[in-house]
Every structure is written in structure tokens, then in C-alpha cells.
Length: 76
Figure 1: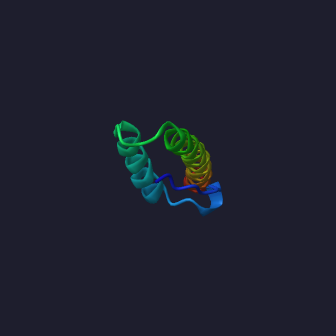
Figure 2 (figure 1 turned 60 degrees about the vertical axis):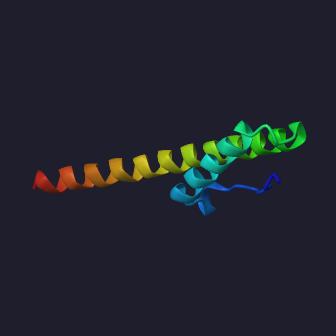
């Protein structure tokens, strides 16, 4: 039942990660999910959240660089 994946921030698509996190949440809420599967799902979710956070931080840095570049262009 649990889907095990190695998650790397370079390979992550945020929208797909959010969909998978929603699936994990639903599976964890199900009484049919075993304790062993719940633990594996939880671990996968933690990795996904961490990868998403890292990816979003990288995007934020890129936006700041673009904004700084744009602001420097206006000063000329």
C-alpha cells in the first residue's frame, strides 16, 4: 500500500508533490492502513515536505536575484 520513493529536490514537481502529500494524508487517515505502512507513508511525507521546502527556498532566491537585477536596471 505504501509507495516508497527517494525524493530529491532537483527532481521534484511541486504540484505532484502536493498531490502525493494529499494521497498520503488520506491513507494515513484510513483505519485500513497498517502501522507499518503508516510509518512508511509518514517518512515519505516528511521527505516530500523537506524537498518542497528546499525547492521553494531556491525559487525565492531566484526571485530575489531577478528583483535585484531589475531594480539595478531601473537606476541607470
